[in-house]
Every structure is written in structure tokens, then in C-alpha cells.
Length: 328
Image 1: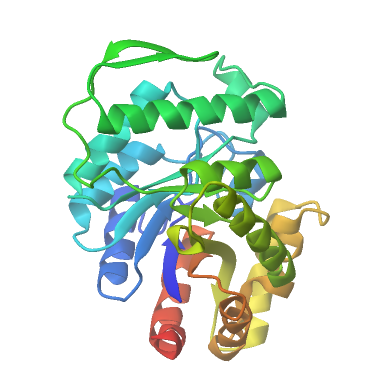
Image 2: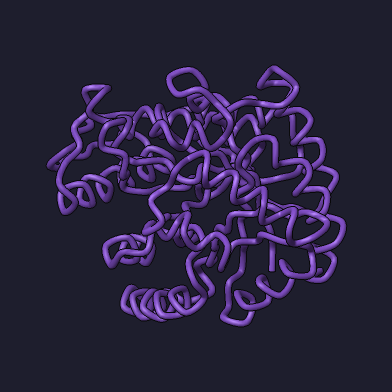
């Protein structure tokens, strides 16, 4: 089992300034055996997510993901850097391919493009960006993936799709990673699994997905990989879990409850409702047992979602000291 951490870039930052916050968090990560660092990719989030992370809606909105990754590339030297995940239709794929290649060059090949089809309709509409119905959005995502890979690997790209057209486009400098940076797709629908099977180097399931669901969806993915003539080992299986780790269970649970109460989240949402049941909420010993349940079904990579920002360093310190060694 390998581990990553999704560093929250929305809400109220400790230490006052975002850059100071990133420096302190990334210094701790670089000294650990954590292998990947991820950031969300949103222009805007619903008010309850900002409030839950101790911020003010309309003020403490997310930092822009790709420019933040560019800063992270200069702060770090070891960890891989990725987006969890980039809505592929939020930007023109030619622009996205250029930004991503630039981060890969600056980091000397440490980029992972986390990709998805997008879900936050108001975020698109407010920017005047089309938010198609689900079927069309997945087709547009497929075209965007093709465009990005072509620009990363080819010269004078001509592409004539339903949504995107390129006429002799070139991208330079090319990414440092060869043949190109890995692409990990996020989601669990049949359409996402089909995109993983065709284009993906990794698959990121939903946050707090129950082990039984992951196992079922993984079996379906492996069949789709075989249909594409690929092997199961070609794709890293990753699961994000909300993580609030403290010295004892009650302290961790109380902190998690405060997060949920601040956000007034709909308890029917798996993302939040299953935090207590499947997330890494509790003492290190509780978290170890929960991780083992995912390890037993073949999960390769676990990503800790450590929101709010004030939770990052306390959770990271205990996790690296008392949990990671068990899986080394």
C-alpha cells in the first residue's frame, strides 16, 4: 500500500498566508514516505464546503489548482503532484495540456493528471462554460483526453471532433515524463470505468467508498481492461478517505462531527455520511484496521483527504509516525 495526501486549498489557512501554509505542509510531507500530493481543481465550491473548512463563502474559495501545483513543484523535490480531479471540460484541452506539461517540466516528471467529467454545474454556468448533460459531458471528456495526449506526444496535431478542433497545433516544451505524465481518472460510473480502461494509468474511486463497492467496481474495471487488451497491473487502484486522526477516538470523532455540523451536509451523501464508517477517523490503531480492509481487496494507493486546513498537520504527524510504518 502506498499513500498520498490531498492538501485542502479552500477554507481558512493556518499561519495566515497560503504560501506559508503550503511550505509547512509540504516540508512535513517531503520528510515522510508519503508518495503523492493532490489538490482539488475548482474555481468555486458550494457555501457549505467553505463553511465546513472554517472559511467564509465568497472569500475563502479554492486557490487555482494548476498555478498552485506550479508553486508546489518548486517547493518539493520528491513527491508526485496531481489534481483530484480536474474537470476535463472546465478548460480548453489545449490550454490544459500546456499548463500540465509546464508543471511536469518544472517538477522534472512528477505530475499526475487526475481527470474527471465534472459535477459542479454552478461552477461552469457562472463562468459561462457549457455544462452538458451527462452523456455529452463524458463524450466531451473523452475528446479532451485524446487532445491532451496528442499534444503531449505529437507534433502538428490535427483533431476534428464534435467538441474540439485543432489545426496543426504544437506544444513545447513537451512533458518531462515519457511517453507522457500518467493520467488517473476519478469516479465510479460505467462511463468513467470505460475511460480508465482506455486512457488511464490510475483509477480514483469516490471518497469514503465502502470496500465492498470498490471490490465490485474493480472487478468490472478489470474486465474492461481485458477488453482493451490491457492488464490489471497497468492501472493503479486508488481510494480517497476522509482522515481526521487524533490520539484517541473520541477526540477524532468530535472533530469530524464539528466539520460535518459546520457544513450542514446532507446525510444521504456518501462522501460525508460514510466518513465515520469508512473514513480514517479515530486513533492510529483504528485507522490501521480500516486501511487493512482496503489492502485486502487490492487497493494500491490510499489518498488522505485531510480537510479542513487546520486538520492537515495534526493528522499527518500521527499518520506518518504510527500508521505508515505498519504498511512499509
